[in-house]
Length: 542
Image (cartoon, rainbow, N blue to C red):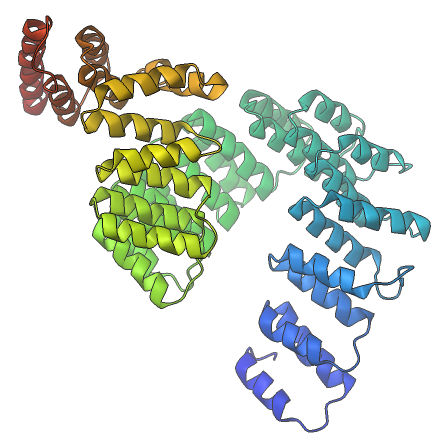
């Protein structure tokens, strides 16, 4: 096992005629620690004498390897009443409570909490912080606060868990009060409040707290930097990101993969992909998460060949790796290659999630391949994702682009929760297929569809004033409905957009050509002439 040859180890173990408890425990522990859960569970099931250490190890391994439901299920199999302290120490109880938090199973967590109280078990910092985390994630912040008040002197990890809980519920005033409850908190507590500010779009407060942290002489860690860089990304503040780069170099953190990944993301979102690529080239070691980020950066900046090279040379690929590459190929006009990658995943029998399948459906939409898209949707149905909102949104766009507006609208109407993408896909589907009246009707519905509808409408009209595509979309909708005045207004507004592209003007010309008669015909011809001149001007400009 120590040499890393796990296959040989299990083969030799299976050949042993006399296996004692020690040999069982050694082999089982090796596979459990390595994350080989199928083999570990087989050994666990076959083990003749399973003591508390073995049970704890199996439960902890499930939780550590992303299987919280299995961890909780196995814990319930113990069926100890009262809990055997030799079998379930505070560490494994904290692990199971953490799994309950991940699953949102607050009742199971409360049952464990009650049993701990009945058995008078000692609350250490690990157990307390896990309970606060449970109640915080499940929205029961009163219980979280009650657990903290049970402690004579709240430790930093418990306080951090409470602050995170408040932040996740948007209760930043309570988070601040919890933060100032202790005067000499460690960096973990500071990180929690900084992260809370960023999560709640209070980036300026995050920067101010970061400055206070430095004034107090606290040593910034990789988590602090990653969170602050996330704030830089949200504000597209490239200059502050460069300042953080200098700080990270001075602190010796620039080559930490988590920090490097945060810098790469920040530079990319600030519109400086070359700086991201430069930093990547200076790194000595890479992990899968970092490589996934670079695939996205290269794809978003049009360097699809570089993205493909990174993907092809990755020593191990996660589901996100495949997803990022498929999305990148689709966005860069390579839908056929994206579909080839999907077929390769099928051959390798790799698990696919909602985002992966939605990306492939989008690739099918790009080439208007109805047959392939429906095959992918059939795959989504097999794995139980046919009603998933992400899949449904991609299907609306897919059927509209393939010309099957009625099917797209049917899916749109059955969606429990429509987002900006699904509304826009349906609107453009109507507009580009000549259903102007339906598009205008849907647009009016959208504006009266509560907060979301108003948000989407404002997104198209107001929130992105320099986005030419928004004006093209509205111009197309109004034009196909015969509302030439509104369409003309969109053209005038688009003229004010900074540096519209040739493609934008061509799309606007196409939308104005969709109607042939009416009192506005002369004006439309004038607009078409003006737009054509703009195409020549933009195309010939240096």
